[in-house]
Length: 173
Image 1 (cartoon, rainbow, N blue to C red):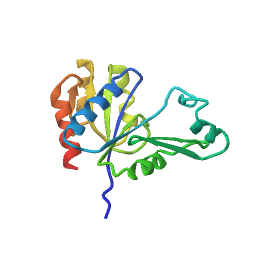
Image 2: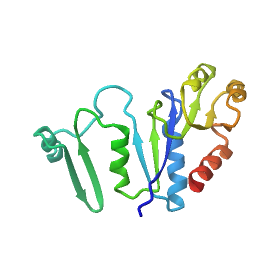
Image 3: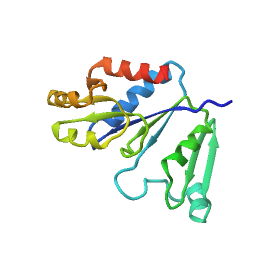
């Protein structure tokens, strides 16, 4: 029986440090031989950049749903339709037999989350999020929200104990 990967979202507002946190987690997990894959929400509107004029983009523009290229062990997948649900994206990555999928963004989804908060203004949005496992904060004022999230640990974003907590959460799931 194939084991489903552990899924963890990293959410926060623009410039809250999501990509930096994801990179730190990937480095730590990969060093321990965990197969990690990521999904990044392109929250800037429009389609993400692709290399136009290459064979794969010509295949897509001709009507192909997907184009896969392999060379020296690297696979590039370009696929296009009106939209891809997060569950469809996860299913694509499950084929790679990943241990862990880190999702950067997609705040409204119900997967377990790391929430990054920059300041007190970001705290108002915590009540709208589901399945918060841990909060990484930038500003000590953010600790005032800790009392409303009784069982959720809070760590300063530069505190290594926060990353250790996340690592243990992922590897003990």
